[in-house]
Amino acid sequence: MSGFRLYFSYLSMLFRSQMQYRASFLLLTAGQFFIPFAVFASLYFLFERFGQLQGWSFYEVALIFAVIHLAFSIAECFARGFDMFSSLVVSGDFDRLLVRPRSTIVQVLGSQFEFTRFGRLLQGAIVLAVALINLPIAWNAAKIATLVLMIACGVCIFAGIFVLFATMCFWTVQGLEVANVFTDGGREMAQYPLDIYKRWVTVFFTFVIPFGCVNYLPMLFLLDRADGPAAAYMAMPLAGVLFLVPCVLVWRLGVRHYRSTGS
Amino acid sequence: MRAYASVWRLRFQLGMQYRTAAFAGIATQLFFGFVFIMVYMAFYANGAKSATIDLPDLITYTWLQQIFLTLIMLWYRDNEIFGLIMSGNIAYELCRPCGIYGFWYAKLLGQRLAGATLRYLPLLPIVLVLPKPYRLGFPPSAASFALFLLALILGLFIVVGVSMLIYISVFWTLSPVGSTLMIAVAGEFFAGMVIPVPLMPGWLQNAVNFLPFRWTADFPFRVYSGHIPVREAAAGVAVQLGWVAILVAFGAWLLSRALRRTVIQGG
Image (cartoon, rainbow over all chains, first blue to last red; front, top):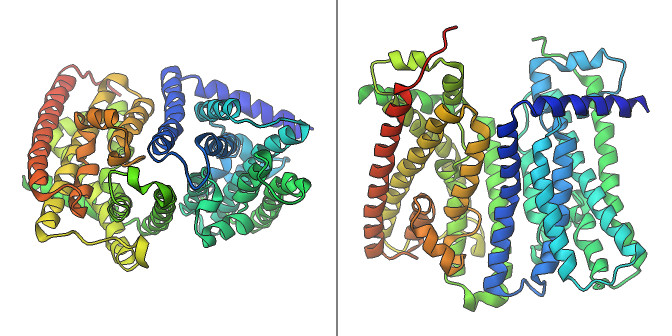
């Protein structure tokens, strides 16, 4: 429990420090709103020109887009500390975290929090609202639970990737930009229904990094397109949690291997 | 001029040091290229009639975007210049025996060329031998290719001209991150980096034609594939030259104004 209290005092500290540069904060938040907005606008223009995407309508793709962007922005808010972790290792500041009697995960999570990412979050929420209003989905408790689960487990996948690549810093010391292929690249890819891609992409992003399980597959259930037991589709997002578990275990292993840079 | 050339060379060599970062960039760009191409192929599968650019031309466009990203992206930032302005160390720059505008311009040019060299040298051979629909095509004629090279270089001059304006704006705003992000997002959208200009709705294309951004990326890439024919391309190069002149003249004037009212606060 004290881990939570510690985390929230980290948050309020970071919030107050980021609010010191108010104009820059607001402009950055606005910028974070417009980055995915430009992507969404081009999605709209493509649908306006081509009408449909292999049987998918604009609002269906908008729902897929919203889920993955919401998951990404929430993960970027919370797990930013892991994304920026290489700087802690390079500067040797990670030593200070180790001598404190608290979990390293809570401390790294609390080391960074990007409040400006709320701009991105807001954009995702608006797209979600637009999609939900325009889609003729018969909502019931099961479907609402599935939608919430999709976003939550999407967060787990992105967070897992951040943790995994942060762990590699223990061995490489410098940050690995290849992580962007899976975070930014995964987001770009998963904002469209997975079945429009070639088979190797679909297989990789279903069984290795399970973006398809939090997005495309449960979406079939929401839109009543699924054939097969509904429960299987509903439970699919939990693959995101399964992905996070080994990432955290590898992190523990990495912490034990850590050797300070000494600087 | 020799001073600018050596600034350029120093920056070029510094940029060449970051080889692992370049490797990561190559992987990222290949992945993004594949994803974009697959998305376009899916859209074209039953809607090719409504397109204003052929799929092979669009694939070429996508690869050229990825290959030359370092030359044309606006969000690339040189934190050193921001640091100089914000910390007041600009005073040292003022003591140098050459104009600041030309000095920074050469520096930014060198950085971008070094970054781009590390990308296109390894990427080009890969995308030229990819299996068929994904392969980067060749330009239809030698004239198209020559004009493409010229347009690409002039586009680079435009990009650096625009980024100089961003740096100069920091003299007034004193906080680079927010305003540069906004300009970069808008500029890249209007350059056709998010959605290719030929696929934009007509009203937007008309608006884009009046802005400089399109001439940095969209124009050279369509000259390469022959989507813009040679005669039209030659006229476009003249427009590019006009933009370079306007941006450099405006930037130099703005910088001289900014410097006149700069007060260095001791320390």
